Amino acid sequence: MDIVSRNTLKAIRFERSEYIPVVFWINPACWHHYEQEILFGLMAEHRILFPEFNPENKAVPEIAPWERAGVPYTDAWGCVWETTDDGITGTVTQHPLADWKALESFAAPDPAETNGITKMDWSEIKQKILKAKTEGKHYVGSLEHGHTFQRLCYLRGYENLILDMTDNGAEFGRLIEMVGTFNSGIVERYIEAGSEMICYPEDLGMQRGPMLSPEHFRRYIKPIYERIMSPAHKAGCLVHMHSDGDIRDLVDDLVVSGVDALNLQDLVNGIDWIAAKLKGKVCIDIDIDRQQITRFGSPEQIDKLIREEVEKLGSREGGLMMIYGLYPGVPLDNVKAVMDAMERYASYYS
Image (tube, rainbow, N blue to C red; front, side):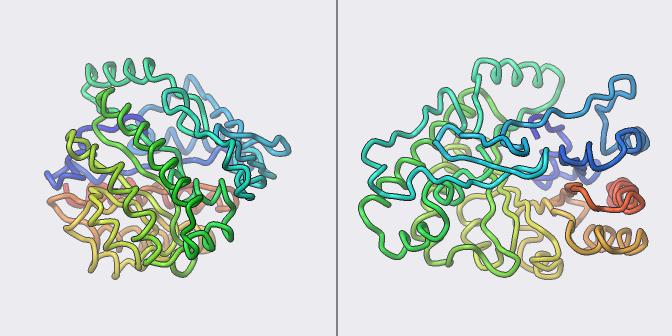
């Protein structure tokens, strides 16, 4: 989401967007799990979802270094990533600070050069922002996915981290400060470059409940969120937060931290719960189900689900966006059904 339209900003600000902003994201692995021409054909048929698609230039997205099967990738923090399927982001298999002794000689990467996972060319980003403004579009900056809680997991390992939060030793305090300072450096550079919105994506939830207790979130993670979101708000940037999983126990703290738009999963959190808790308070960027109905249901059930979400979560004032992430395994009839329904109901309030 490097570039967004004015319509998207209006939806987030409850300024009566012309239509519900919709995003259909195709995971890179799909390009070797499905026939490419079929995917290109679906893109050509759905120009609301794929407004920039050029049928004369059918380019398959390049696989990122941390998405290459059988090729371990070491990021800027020294965490080693591995995956078993080209295009699917891997998992960290080697944690550089699994032993606290390694902290003595450990140094954080430089936010002037990297976002933690890949290199950053800030001069190029500034040029993109200027170009977007001349075209009436708006640039969106983003921290790496997993910028705080997950980065601590990558560095220490999940079990170690949960124990660290209980022990609260000096080493843990030093590591939290290191991660927070690095993230602040990224945010400051996006602000200086002129970003209209900054995204803060990471996963805090499991299938049921969050990956850490609400008490530990408030004590250790929320202060970093506030530290890195506050400068964005002061500079007039919108704040977009993403988390997969069940985050119901954390939502109050996320909203208080200063989130303008919250991307969360629909069924794991519950559509009715989301409506009761968040509608009208923040822009709901609903992540359409990838586990149940779109994978195993019928096209009719898919249409019903997306219509229900629009009716219960949307309004003429705005405050609703929709995104679907396609991963291998979804029947092609269902892929088309999701695309059809997203385009059909995007104009529900227009």
